[in-house]
Length: 231
Image 1 (cartoon, rainbow, N blue to C red):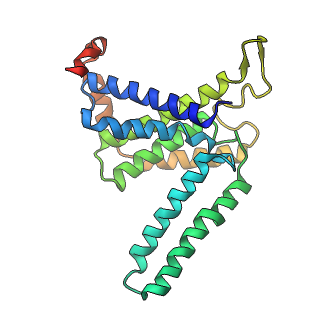
Image 2 (cartoon, rainbow, N blue to C red; image 1 turned 60 degrees about the vertical axis):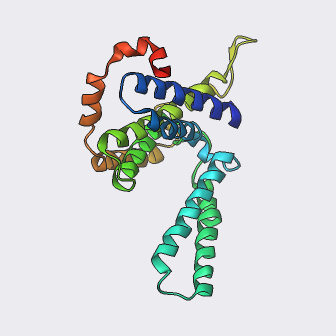
C-alpha cells in the first residue's frame, strides 16, 4: 500500500497532466488549472477516508466540522447572544469532528466499499452536484470537477494495487485485489446502498451533454504539440 505522500504526489501529477491536456485542446482556460489539479489531488486521498487513523479522513472531518460551524453561525447568529452562540458553534464542531467521525469509523472498514470504482463514480457525481447546485458552476465545469475527482480516485486505487505486487519475488501479496475492485464484494448491503446513492446523484446532476459536445469538438491535434501551452 502506498503512503500518504506517494498518493498525494502521484494524484497531483496526474491532475496536472490532465489539466495540461485540457488546456491544450481548449477544454478549459489556464486559470482553471489550479482548481482542477487540487480536485485531482483531493480525489487521490479520498479512498483512504475509511481508514480510522489516516490523515485524509482526519482532514476531511475537520473540514466538515468547520463547514458545520459556518452553517450553524449562519443559522443562529441573529437568534442568540454571543456566549450561547459560541457554545452552539463549539458543540457543532465537536459533534461532527468527533461524534460523527467515531460513528463513521464504526460503520466502515478499510478497503471496503469506499475503495472501489463504484465509490469513484459516487464521489465524482457528488462533486458534480455540489459544483452545480451550491458553487453555481455551469454544467460543463461541474462535470469537469467531478471528472478530476474520479481521476485522482482511480489513480489511488491503481497505485495501491501496484503496491500489492512484489516484483522482487515475482509474487502477489495477500492484499492483491482488495484495492481496485468494482464494488465491495464482501459487503453487498453497503454496495447496494452506495449504488442507490450514486443513481440518486446522477438524477440530481446536470445534463452531461455540454461536456460531451465540447469533448467532441475539442482540438485533439493540439495535444500533440504541448509547447503551445508555454507560448
